[in-house]
Structures are given as C-alpha cells and as structure tokens.
Length: 228
Image 1: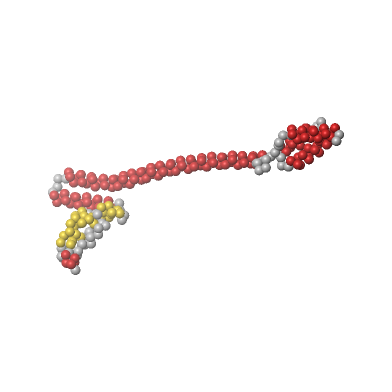
Image 2: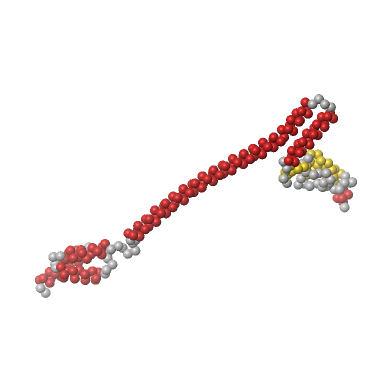
C-alpha cells in the first residue's frame, strides 16, 4: 500500500469520527458510500466540506410525522376562527339573556297594570252602591221606607255582581253538595228527603265556575231512609 493510500484511509477514518450525528432518513451504509464518493470527487483538502454538504440537507429535513409549516398555518387560522365564533356566541348569549330579563320585567309590569285596571273598574261599579247606603242612613222615613230602600240597594249590588260574572250557588230544593254547600247543622225531618237543603243561612257565590265561597245551609236528616 502506498503512502497516499494510507493517508487517504487515515483521513477517511478521521472524517467518520468527526462527522456529527444528524437525524436522516438514510442508513449508515448509504451515508458512508456518499461520503466516499464525495471524497474521491473533491480530494483530501475538501473532504470535511463535502461531508458537511452531504449531512446538512439531511439535518434540515423535517422529522417524520411533524406538522408542516403550511399545516401549522392552517391550524392557526382554524383556531382564530374558532375564537371569533366563540366570542360571537358569548355576545349573542348575553344579548338573549338581557332580552329575556327585559321581557320578564315587562310581563310583570303589564300583569300588575292589568290587575290595577280590573280593580279600579270593579271599585267604580260599587261606588254608587255605597252612595245609596249613605243616603239611606241619612233618611228620616219610616222603617218600611228604610227597608224598601235597602232592598233596592241589594238588587243594585246583585246586578253589579252578575255583570262581573258572579253567580249565586243554588240552594232551594237542592240536594246537599259538599263541593258548593257547607252544612251548619243536620235537622231531623221525616217529611223531607234525606240530605235535602232545608234553609239557606248565608249565600254562596261562584265566579266563572270557580267557588268564591260555599253556601251555608241546614240539611235534613231522614232516619227512615237511613234504615231502609
């Protein structure tokens, strides 16, 4: 072996030792073959530069499976779009919440106004009744005249109640109904059917099928019908 050949082999071994480890998709045998070809092409003086020229592109190649710059830009754009949509949804939610609160307050205010209007309308209808009672108290007539005046006032009040939808609970010749009647007492009677209303002590009233108060009545209790 000549001195130049030995020197070349010595340079080759030293070059392999000095070359830094770089991640590359090529195998070690393929890289060594590239280094040897480059050495033969450029000579001993430029051996290190040739090795760096071969290894540098391999080091710059991206790691397998890592996202590419274009992919990163796309992901960033999608993230920004998602943030913008989230902000829009939060703003819309806040607006809807404010609208709901306003609607609830408006509904409560309208309900209160309607209740006040209904109350005012009802009170206005009873004011003439109160006026007539005051006139009756100042009257100087006889007891019969006073009674006649009170009867007129009662009929006036009953007419107002009917206009408001208030109905009297029927009691005459009625069978006791615990849904609309309240028994004050049971009276033993053999000439009257059992549980028939005998007397109305206090009137009961309903408003559009809603019971305002039950009629207070006395009810017959027929012992013969009990034993039969």
